[in-house]
Image (cartoon, rainbow, N blue to C red; front, side, top):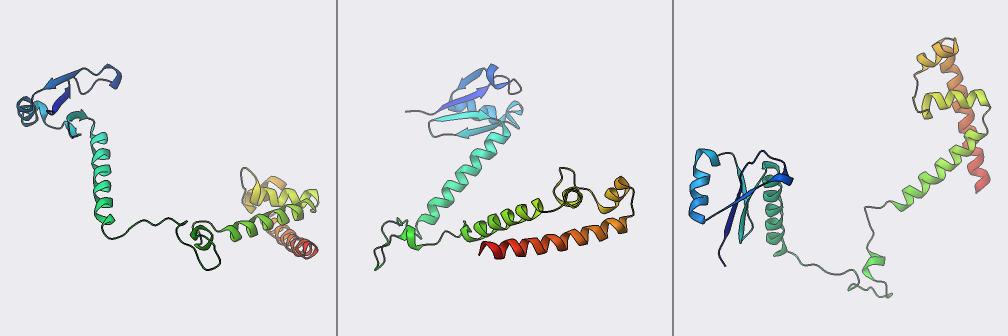
Length: 181
């Protein structure tokens, strides 16, 4: 089977309206060497050569380079199923090999800490909760200075209140953690 060559009649038109011109190999070679063919991109897909955008050409080349790289690397290693590995206790490789991408323990600890903090926040009085919410959790987090202006007090007073509430929160978190053990 012979190779077919296609170029766009107008490379500037939108993809839905593209008109294709089929060329022979000789016509294609002359076209790409001509001033009209300069700055146009083509990809060779074995039996078809097709004009594409610059971005499509770069993407195609990148995929080709990756495929070539992977083929060259396959010579140095082989794939082994985790189910083919079995230790003396009868566990498969999937059960023995740790998944380093998932930190299950860390995620579980973080979830417990968040739940504990949520419970501690619920034990705060309304004013203290609003202060912590505005400084740390609100949709628009405010600075101590902004909150002081809003409340009509000094920034130093907001800082003192914040420290007092944070100490109370710390006490509540420790108390809740001990009660859950």
